[in-house]
Amino acid sequence: MEKDFQKWHSFKEDLHRNAERVLFHEREVWWCALGANVGFEQDGKNDTFERPVIVFRKFNKEVFWALPITTQEKSGKYYFSYTHDGKRFSIILSQMRLLDGKRLLRKVTTLPNTEFQELDMQFHVLVKQTIPPLLAGSRRPKPFMNQV
Image (tube, rainbow, N blue to C red; front, side, top):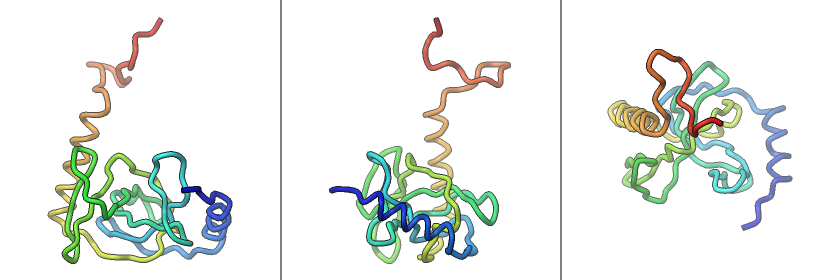
């Protein structure tokens, strides 16, 4: 499928200039204007380039970390599955993005606290497994390859 980057850039410019800020909180699921993205990054759909996301971490009233959601049931360490209104969804842990709240279009629901805590724990386990540990006594991460 061909991506319409020009249409997305036009819509994104309109969001930047005209979208009003909405009040959002951690644990909330929103339809979000994710856009037309590169390669295997999650794209939005429809005329507003939207996809559901969960507000994973809120930093201030403007920006937050978002995790995209898919209706395709996925399993493995990069996904967290949950049920809403009798339907299964998967949160894509590997596709976290920092987003501006102006991208949020419509609130869907709020993830129950117990499920959000499970999501949080699974994300932290993934990060611990993926990011190399720090050297003992050093604040610098271990190099990925031997340096010449």
